[in-house]
Length: 81
Image: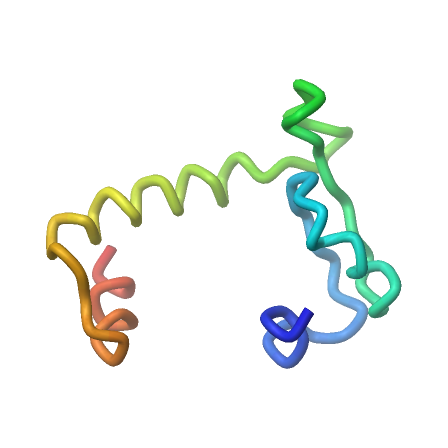
C-alpha cells in the first residue's frame, strides 16, 4: 500500500473499516484492527473509525464550498477546516 507506506511509521497501530484494500496491512508489519460496517459492526472492543469518518464528512462538506481546488492549495484549505 504505497499510500500508507512512507507516511506511517512501521509497526504503527492502524484502525480501519473493512475495505478489502486494507487486507495487506498486517503483512506489511502494522498492527491492524478493523470494523466491518458491511456486517453492521461499528465498534469492536475499543476499535472504531467514527471520529475519522466524522472528520472527513465535515471536511468534504467544507471544501465543497470552494467548487474545486488546485492541488497545491488543498493543504491550505484543509488546514483551515
